Length: 269
Length: 285
Image (cartoon, rainbow over all chains, first blue to last red; front, side, top):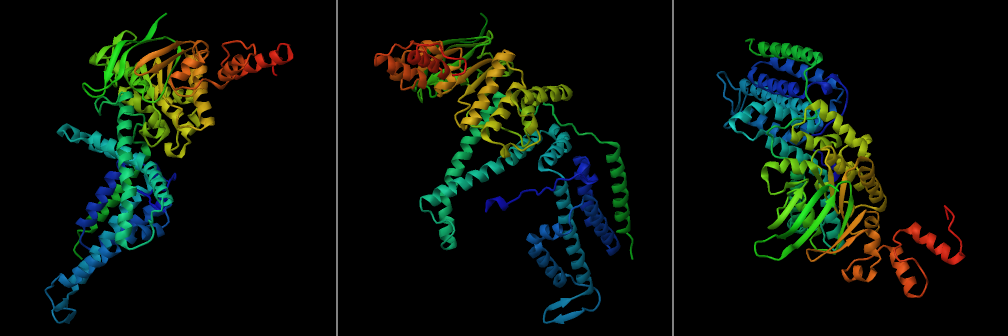
């Protein structure tokens, strides 16, 4: 049951997108999101959609994965669309009127654009996690945020926390399953009863889990000290990130396309 | 002989004024030696292990690592790099999500240059026999494999001494055997001093020297033969002796003329063969 939970789904592969420098991917994703929300016409948005679809094809990720990643936010999209349709007031005559509810063409236009933007936002960020393993992504974040360490932001510590969290998720899932089985063997009813009863039945699972997590944390801290861990200062890394010729080429292509999308989004049709 | 670790009359309590976990203990570990530390639960053996690389500092007395005092903060990282520690639970000492990154963890902390780091990580993985798992996620490995990853992570620092704090206690027999084989080869072929804290008598029987602790003190000390031939004394400390030693002890008590210091299975089998047939045992009896 717990095995189905996947965090930061990753599809290993060897497409140009998979092999791209993670820092570059991260920066381009952020740029894409900004352009998505800056552009204000349908031409720009359509180009953005086409570009993203092309990237999915290059990465070899089935398009149905987009549908899967969108599933949890369908209610949000529906809510914002409905709100926008009814809340936007336009200059001309309403398309539809019923009591105090009025629908203006501007409202419809705006609602559609927002919906498309949210879909692109989710699909775009999902593409990043589909093509980049969480550990590489953490690495990229640490390196991109490094300049902020000068402002005394705990960049290394954050990255270390993320790494350790990723490392311990499977271990703690295993442990939770073990504890659940142990409690079931003692007669705990975890899968039946009212919602209230089921939540209460989880308490004897969570308490041992937390105690064990604290004990693990303490042992891990000792083991890290034994291996000379003393924070991010003077630390070197095994894996080095280098921008290759292909990375620069990809960067140039993507920046050109993003510039085109950005520019077309500003044309007044 | 050169001293690797020296503990001089150390005392240690976890709480100020509380019960002494270590109470006036002196021990010396020579370079290249394989020392096993035995003792019942709560006798202070894990506490002693944590003194050897300055995780704990003695409340009284001194611990020296190759002549460096563990209380000297300026030498802290030198000491930790010289004395590598492997703990009981492999899950709680692996930091990274990929084997080779975990092996590199200590070197990253020490600021080793990436090219050199690559070489040392590969070398350490080869020595511990985990090279073929280098790109795997640690949680996909068996207990014994994980423990060997932990050993690789420590020997990448090129320590002079390896302290194993019940490193095989959570493993199945096959995993335990593989880990011990790795440790023995590091000791014999690479001259790494080993201090193994254990409660497996068979493991202790393979050591060069055995120290038995009780109540925070050294109760018995000597070669495995010297220690395990004192069956009654070892039992009095709530410990077992290796099965062969026990068998010989019982046979002698029953009046069979067995040599007094047999602690490993092969020796014991050969002696029994001689006793029963009156002939020397064949090489592969």
